[in-house]
Image (tube, rainbow, N blue to C red; front, side):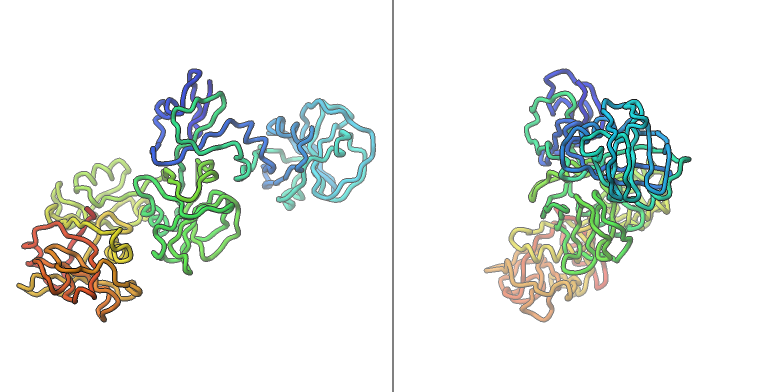
Length: 510
C-alpha cells in the first residue's frame, strides 16, 4: 500500500504501522513531539473550499458554495483536468477556459448571472465540451449549463484584475486547492506508533521551516528558540500558534510583509516583544512583526497542535553555530558548507570555540566565511543554574550573559580585589528592574555560589561568586536579604583569583 511520510510517498506491506513508516523513511521524529495522521488526499480535498487558478497574468482565487451538490463534487474530482487548457474566449462579460469532458446534462434555459459567478458550461450543448466560465459583469443568456443551481458552483474572491487582463493567448497553468486549517478536519494527533496504516494515509512527524534572507537577527532568534529540535506551544488560537519562551528579548525591526498562512514572525515591539508566531490563517502586514520565514512542509502539525504540545522543527538551512566545537571540528563542519574558517584566539585544533563572527547564520551564508575564537578548554566555566528555585533571577542571568541565545555566555569582571575571595561581574540595572528577592540564603553561602543583588539594594543586577564559605555576606558582598542565589560555578577558583577588572570569562550551563 502507498502512504506518505512528510510528503515522501513510500510503499509498505499491508498492516504496517506508523513506526514501520518512520523507520523506513528515517524520518525526523522525537517521541516527545506530536505526530499528525491524515486519512488521505480525498478526505482533505473534500474539505477544501478555495482554489487558486494560476495563469500567466496572475492568479484567480475562487470559493465553492457551501452546498455539497453534484457540481462541487464534480469540480473536486475533475479540476486538475483544466491544467494547460487555453483561455478559449474573452468578452466584456466573461472569460472561458477548457474544454474538458463531463457527464453533465445541458439546459436550454436562459439564466441571470452575477459578477464573480463561476459556472460549468457545456458549449454546443455537448458535455464533451465543458468549459469553465467566470463572469466579469452581470450577465443574462443561454450558457448551456446544467439546471443544478444554473451551473453556478463558486464565486471569485481574489484576482479580479487578473481576470480582466486575460486574453485568448493565455492559458491555465494549473489549479491548486488552498488548504486552510479547517480543511484538515480528519487529521489527528497520534502518540501510538503501533497504529495500523491504511492506503493513502499521510504522516507528518516534523515541521520544516525555510528561514527568510532579509531578517538575520530575527532568524537567529528563531534558532535560539528551538531546543533539541523542538519548540513548545505556549498559546493556540484559530489564527496562529504562539511560542513565548524568549519573550522580552527584543530584536531590531527587520523585514515585514503579509502574514500568510504558514508565515513565521517575531514580535519586535510592545509588551509581547520576543514572541514568535506561526500563522494558521492569513493576516494583514504589521510593522510590529518581523517576517522570519515560512513553513515549507508540515503545516498539518501546526493545524492540530494544542497549548503545551511539543513540535519537532527542522530548518533549511540549518543553524551555523560553532560554539562548543573545537577549532578542528568547526573546520570540518564549515568545509562541508564551503564556508571559510578564520581562527582567532587560541588557534590549536583542540581549542574550544567560545564566540564566532558573524554570529548570525544568514550573514555567514552570505559572506561565506566566519571568525572562530578559541580558548583553552579548561578555562571554560561550567555553571549549574537554579531555574526552579530562582526563575526570575535565572532568566536575568541567562539574558545578560547571552546564554538564552547562545550555547556559551560571557561574564565581564566589574570588580576584582586580590585576597578578597570574591569576584563581582557586570550586570544590567535596566534589565534587573523588578528583580524581587527570591531564593535568598539562610545560614551560609558556600564556595562557588553564584548570586545576584536584588531590588532591595541600590546595586541591583550585579552578579558575583564567592571563593570561600560565608555566613554573613552573599556572592555580591551584600547581606543575605539583598542576595538572590541563582547557581554554582564548577571550576578551580585559583584560576579566577588571578583575574582582574575588565577580564572576560566564558561560561556554559552544566
